[in-house]
Length: 176
Image (tube, rainbow, N blue to C red):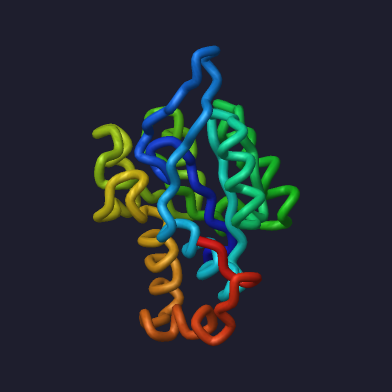
């Protein structure tokens, strides 16, 4: 059973666009509110979630804090090593992890995690190895679709998935 869902960022939680200022720093990153709600949805069912990204940025750090991700490993391309550290820290096996990735840097996690998801616009090599190819492209609700898929695999209907969120929905419990 999946206990932790990890998301790549650029191309998954964003559409992959990087907005830079005049000094070359990443100044702005656009996130989809549907994906923000996915974090609350997973948490409502006791599933941890986080990011495992090759890039680090101030906008990403702010979003991680805002949404209350359980795990955040950024700025590393050694994703399989990072996954092993995360699973040890979280006290779970790699088979209890779902990962959502879109590009070749994510390929080492295919076959290691319990379920590997890819957005519809992922690199063709990633699409070929993904356990599940999602209907949405990166930055357009991919996390939400993956969260619903994880919960459906637990036998929950859409109504059952969202019931705990709707019943407790306040600004302090759910961030989009």
